[in-house]
Image (cartoon, rainbow, N blue to C red):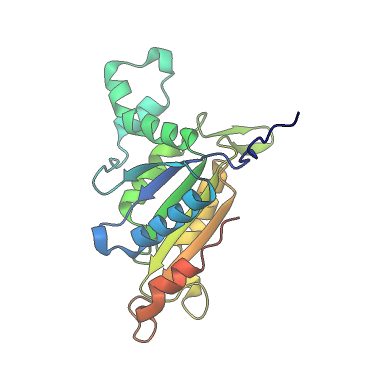
Length: 212
């Protein structure tokens, strides 16, 4: 006797970490693009969960001496002050480690990233924790994650005369790759300040989303 058994869904749910660095709230194009990426992921992997980290409302402090000192203090020797100083860094790194997919909203400000995103990066790039340096050079310790960058800009930086002034994608690709996050794809909403381009910029950015 043969039983009709359901075909097993081989696509397992994913844990998604959504990093937001725009101060524009509901008007933010990088947030809208990031949400569209997440919806595509959830459609591809039903049951996926999202952990949202808004760096503007849940900001990471700028690095001070206390933070750096705590980073270089072995866990077993940390005082309560050291533990508090390392709290943001430890939380940020754990969120990355727990995620399967990371979506980072990165609006272009003055040709680079928002200061809140830079502060987050300074807390998650830690020697001996997310990277190590040995005889063969530096090695990233965060493995097996997929990263999507939701990049927004008022001008067009993916090509043309302004391309050399885009320090967002090259920097993120380098610094995140340094800690092992090498599988990165960038989607863009660009030209949002250019008449004749801005009217369809978001639609074009969302239509460009193809997961790989």
